[in-house]
Length: 469
Image 1 (cartoon, one colour):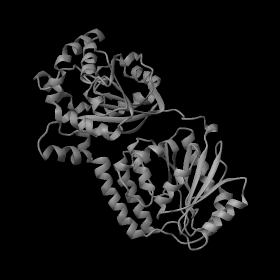
Image 2: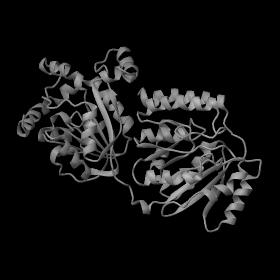
Image 3: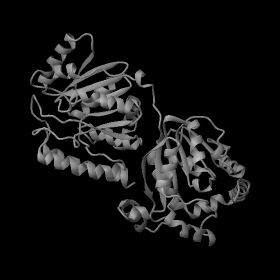
Image 4: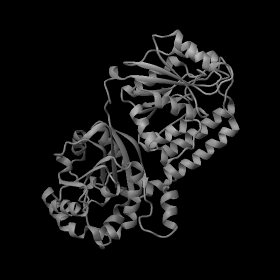
């Protein structure tokens, strides 16, 4: 089917599009629910292959544009949703040049003659922060879909390609897009009470079964720097409680990074004079940009939020005041994020050999267990969820802050508040191995068993808020 034939086909089907969507209402509702998790309300969204516009409208975009090669589909979409904009345009030769937060390509790839060429053209509508979401059919379902089309159960589309996830990822990679995460959705596309929910929420997320689901999903990003690396500034946040002996060392051992660097101490009600030590160090080094704050609440999570709210630079970094993560390693984190290799940089203590007393045996087992749990939840590899050193763009932190109501106030550490938020934003997570050291001052403030139980609760919470949606 050439381009003209495809246009005629979809023009002819436009008047029946609503009827066919009603037949597949449950399947479309499942896709919309997943995309509503990925795309926050109010974002700018471009949908390529928009059909009659229902999917785009379900995302409640602040700025929504749909494009399609069929003038009849575009006309119908504009009638259905006059508050959105719909244009005649061709995925393989896009004329639109406006930049968008999200680009949705749902069930469209099979109609494209040259998918690689089409992906190449996406750069004109992308910023470095744009997320590209593709949804396509699992090739294992090809016989079922063809049967449904031939028997009139499904609208006939005559798909040209049946591509596994790895092939789509390879085509994106060839055109300088990096896949952030990929997976499968909708194991049962028809509504059977109780059974459909079990299949699609639980079974479709289990090994072996997930590769049998109807749709393949990928979230990708352009491989591009947000700013020139020598123009990026950074904030180093040091939450501290009963860490008097480490305060000055944190300043002396932290290398200068980026265009400008500030250090923010957030003190949390110490009994050893830590707050006074922070003020002394601030006065002693007037050539350095040092801010000292005092917590109103309790816990590291509260300290992180207070410090980040006061930060003024591009990149936000956390350095635990126990200095078990050497401050000398921070440039590795800065380079990873400023160069565009990742958007959320997480420290990993599980690569290099640790010093003897740096992490107790049960802590190590716990970290390894939770790394597997959260790799499953996030659909991105992560070895060490509990390392305190985490780095992200201030712009992304503000988005996490604005979307915090989705998860609620659940994390006294601050680690999982940031990690869950990064996953919700589809940020590319990269881990930097660090040399984990023994403490030289003070005692650990982590209770292994009490906090271990809390982490189990977070894992369970994450299943329902991230995976089983």
